Amino acid sequence: MSNNVSLKQLTDDLERLEKEAANNISLAVEKEELEKLRIHFLGKKGRLSKILGSMGALESSERPIVGQRANLLKKQLNELISGRFNKLKEEALAEQIANEKLDVTAPPAGTPFGHRHPLISTTEQIVDIFCGLGYEVQEGPEIENDYYNFAALNIPEDHPARDMQDTFYLDNDLLLRTHTSPVQIRCLEKNPPPVRIIAPGRVYRRDAVDATHSPVFHQVEVLAIDEGLDFSHLRGTVMAFLKTFFGDLPVRFRASYFPFTEPSVEVDVQWKGKWLEVMGCGMVDPAVLEGLGIDPDRWTGFAAGLGVERFCMVRHEIDDIRRFYTSDLRFLEQF
Ligand code: DAH
Image (tube, rainbow, N blue to C red; front, side, top):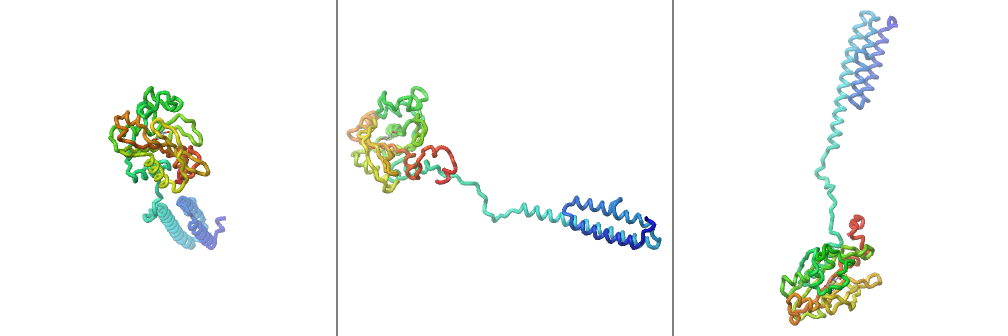
């Protein structure tokens, strides 16, 4: 075969090889591909070597023509390969830079902000209103003893509230406070009247969980002791507070009984066609004041215990107390 090889054939072969190689090189998208093409076309056993190998059959005068052409082609293809190689490198770098680009003007993605739990913001609203009326915030411990939680509040030994059924006892004497009323006693022990305080906080009862009961809930205690305070001051304060908090919801006072107030009332607001109790209150029982060495003939006052959950439920139209404690973001994010 080689004997029949003509100059024309070899130059045609070279031309074809040039076209094919140039085309493949320009299409290469990876550096490894270029190296393979180089080996395929220009390597020791590559296509160009093959063409050169068949040069022996040419006239000696023809060989340099093919040889020169082949050298030139080799040089050209090497240039094409390194050109393409550099181009790919540049593109890769450009892409990397584009990916790593930091847009300093872009607004931050930001961490999602938390916000106040609806029970906390309701407590704050209640506290704010009373602060506006001249009350000061006081806090007491959640772990109380029998004296502050019961005895000092005139709650007798056999009162059902003292029952194991209602109270979480830690030992014979220590317990989780069942209401915020013990703060009344702690306050009056330290501060002689006149006093006007509110005490927000968590309270505990051994209640089974349902739509309106939770073993942990929140109260705000109110206490005002001064000379000459009577039931009209209690009623005026409660009405002013409720009007500020709820606007014009219907309100009713219902006679009731608490050992530490006399007379005692429960206050209901009308919500969704039903009366809902939102607080207990009354005139501080003289026995409580006497127990603290305060003269009940000179000092009188009123107290109230507000159920924060109830206020929050009415304000935000929530009908199940359990929603407050389940940490469901779909619920909490609404507030
Ligand atoms: N401590 C009562 C309770 O938790 C609520 C209460 C009623 C508080 C009357 C008061 C009050 O201060 O005067 O059920």
